[in-house]
Image (cartoon, rainbow, N blue to C red; front, side, top):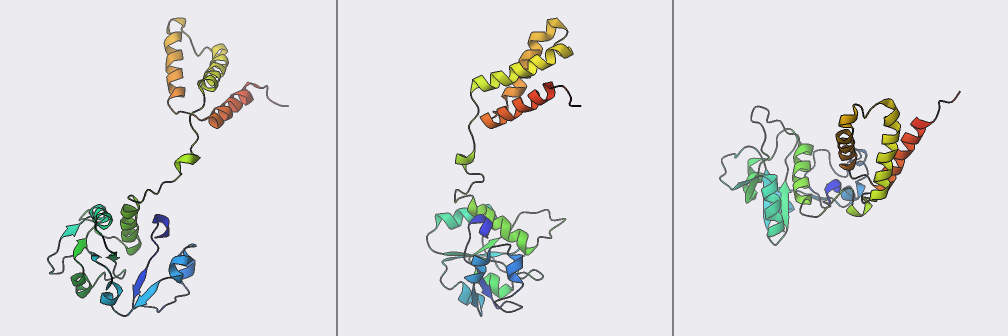
Length: 214
């Protein structure tokens, strides 16, 4: 939940009670979500203030409702006003029929029917990820990405490498030398190195040029 910007967790009659001392270490630092978790006696009470309730299940359990993928559910959550809730059942048994009946929509992850095993954590992360894609989360932030280095530095790297390759016979036969140089330039131009990467590569080449130390 914390990875994808979700903060509000509601629990319905937790099996081991609440608070649970085992939850903190398992949360890997997301204690702020645990600290604010709310506990309810029934699922109906937990979603009483929600206008849109999605029940995650692979079985219809005799209930006829619209069925959406996590992506479609995320679109609906962001498009419709009011609070939304996604219900997840226990790891072993999933949601009870009564819980599914509370929902307006069933949320099902498309998976291979020959291997339909999907644990609770996997289901949560898939739904949370689809929801987060509409939140503009990005890693790493664009401002942390350095722009490509100036052409002068790229030309310097290419010239440096060519100078090292020349005495090794890399550009032979001479008839193919120009084509080989163009191909080499194309390979080195594609990545869009930033200035730190170009300097690092120049440092590597300079090290290779030096005579071995005694």
